[in-house]
Image (cartoon, rainbow, N blue to C red; front, side):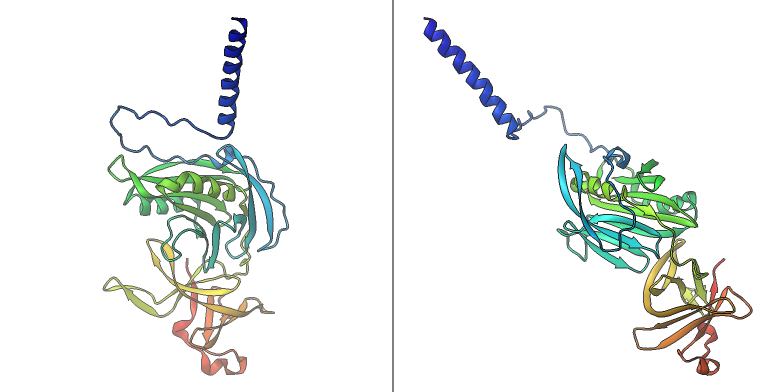
Length: 340
């Protein structure tokens, strides 16, 4: 009889040890199905990036420099491969996961697209741009665009290296309690004479994973000041006039300068929309003040913008690089004036 008791006790202990080992192997019980009827999806609230462990950011990294970092996902450490991004034209630097995201540098923005998405029509990506105006003005513009399709959640967030920012979440279809298939999370970060706007686009079912990864990236973002502090900052407009929406008159092009490109576009709802850009071949400060910028168009035309002798807010256009030909190559309609 005593031996039988020992056998029963030993079997019980073995069962306890077996259950402990199974739980340690990551086996999870399947929750019982609820008898309650399904309800509409709750709005997605992405984890506050300030709550995530800080990634140690080293100063002095060069654009394109790669290194390893450790992040926490679902309670577990994950080693990720980061690449440093430094965009002096937009005025920020940050790190991104180059094994999971493809970097696309375009005039006026940086974009980081999931490697698993279709490049021409991605669902999961983070885009970063610069917009003129204070936080309230930029927020109002963002909300006006998103509120056409979404119910909005707005609050403030603290980023580890960029400080306090405005946060706008668009996750619920306007006029309903239903989750949208695609959601947007917008961070509006004060940056000198404007704001860095970082918008995370996610498929609803992928928002938790990509949202956390994008939060880690944004916690590495720092404001560095735009390089184009050359008197060429802001938006310019051509002297020539075109027409928009029927009889509405507008400049033929609005123009912005980066450290590498002259960007031509139009204004839509107060936002600069890129049409095309030309590469800058040289940019020099003139001895008497002002600047000379030379570029080449895609059709091979070489041209120069040069600050007017009598007005620093006017850039005169010459369809040549040769200064001796300026008199004959001057084109008044293509000259630029700074927008107020």
